[in-house]
Image (tube, rainbow, N blue to C red; front, side):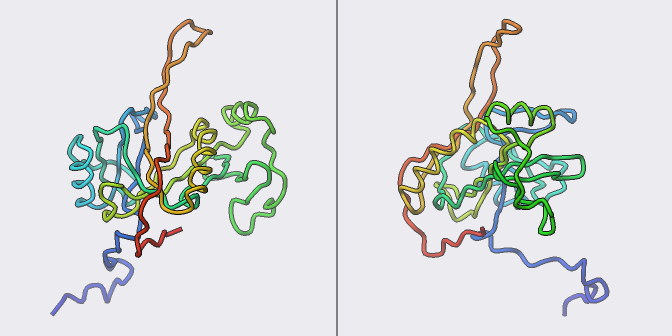
Length: 239
C-alpha cells in the first residue's frame, strides 16, 4: 500500500512523467553566464531536466559530463557539447516562430510582428495598433540597442536526426543575423512542404572594427535546410 502523504498536500504531489516523444525535452543554447555576464559559445550547450536525455546528448555529441546549473526552469542539467553543428529535423515552416519584443525589468513591455503590436497579453489594449519601432532594418537594430525598440525573438522546434525518439528540443535566439537568414530557411521549408533535414550550426564570423583598428569576432546561429525527411506517423508537434 502506498503512502497517503499527498492526500494532505495534493499540490506537492509529484506529476506523472511526461511523454518525452511529444513534449519538449531540452533546449539548445549558444551562450552561458560568466560572473553574471553573458558569453557566447562556439559549440552547443544543451540543457534538459532529464538525466537520461543528458546522457544521450553526451553520447551523441561528446563534451563534458552533465552538471547542474542555476535556473528557474525545469532544465536544470547542462551539457557543454563538442559539436558546433547538429543535424536536425524540422516539421515545416510552422517549426519556426518569430516575434519582436521590447523587454523591461519585469517582462515584456511591448510585442509586435514588425509592423503592428501583438499585445503582451490577451487584454493588452495596444494589440493591433501600429508599433513604435522604426521602419528600416538598421534603425530597428539601433533602437533595440538603445533600449527603445523591440528586438527579435526567434524560436525553432526540432528533433535530432540521429535520435528523434529522444523528443523535441527548441532553440531561441535574439540574433539579428538569424532574422535575416531565416527568410531563406522558411522558403526552403515551404518548398519541401513537410519534415525536412537541416543543419543547426554555430558559425564564427570575424570582422575588422575600423573604430579601434582591431579584428573582432562573434558567433551566429545558422539553419541550413538539407532536404526532405521521412514523415513519422506519430509526429504531432506541440505547437
